[in-house]
Amino acid sequence: MKAEVLKGHLDGLLLASLEAGPRHGYAVIEALRSGSGGEFDLPTGTVYPALRRLERTGLLRSAWTTVGGRKRRTYELTAAGVRALAEERSSWQRFSTAMSSMLAGAPWPATT
Amino acid sequence: MAGDHLTAPDPDDDAAEVVRGYLAAVAAALIGPQPWRADVLAELRDGLDDAITDHADGGMQPAAAARAAVAEFGDPYRVAAGFAGEAAARVARRVAVTLLATGPLVAVSWLAAFAASGAPMWQGRLSGVWVLMPVIGLVLAVAVPAALLAVVATGRAERWLSSGSRLASRAAALAAGLCAGGDVLMLVVFSLWLVTTTSGVLWPVAVWAMVVSGLRLVLASRAARHCAAVGAQAA
Image 1 (tube, rainbow over the protein chains, first blue to last red):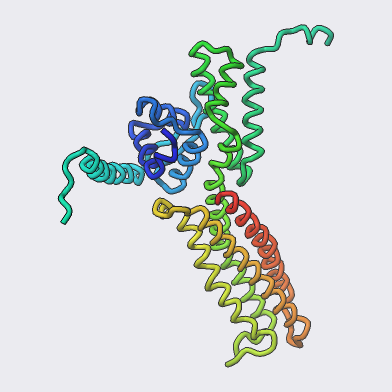
Image 2: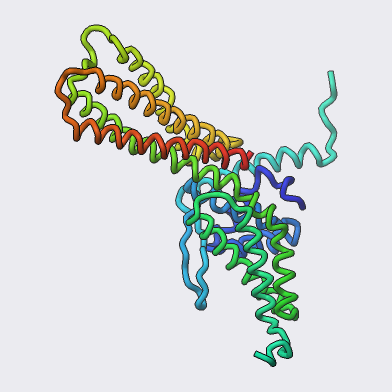
């Protein structure tokens, strides 16, 4: 699925990918890919800048850590990020319920 | 060394060369402050190492794994372009915060210089070169809100703005340009006063204000051009 299709939902996806705990950038890309059964194969040039934007806007925090002798930058949710994720979820639930009812093939109200 | 050309190339060297070449291409196209660019490249390097490990675990030779990893990361120019909005936001925020933080120092320096040079700041009406002073008020009335807008648009409010980084770049460029213009005006007005006044002037205070304002003029001019250039790339 192309990144453009996910525009508007990228922040929610990134926040959700970090809900279970801190991850580094490539692990976020892999988590989105595997968690979506390969549907969300987002490009590097989209995910890494978006993680930094979410950090700048206070929804994530990051730290350089050394793991197995390698320095890596890991991201995790802030309290504001947890709240933003809950809002994204709630908004998505409403949107998806409305879309499902529209696309389910059920009869539409008769026109007057 | 005579036998070197007979030695088979080390596959790890080939892999490292592939990664180096890719990161060099990203670095060449990446805009923004140098420490931030170095940080981005270090993060990409770490991600590439992960991708190479994944491909090598799948049975690829190191050089092939490195080529597969850079292919997976995509066109280096597109990767660098992906960071343009973030670079613009960071530059705009830094410029705006610096202007807001240093503005009071410049203002206090000028007020001290006026007080120390017998300048008739207000005697019921403005006369001579001092009639230009209301322009400074106008500059501040636009520059300060513009700088504040740049700070707000690159903070949490960015979530609700469709193009916060572009807006912030323009606002910061405007604020910096106005501050530079204000400095020019102050330097001209004060210099004219100094060459025409017969009052006693406390020169260290006057020179201090002119140096501070002159320095801010140079830096704000550069910042305005930089914000505009980086913001244009983020567009």
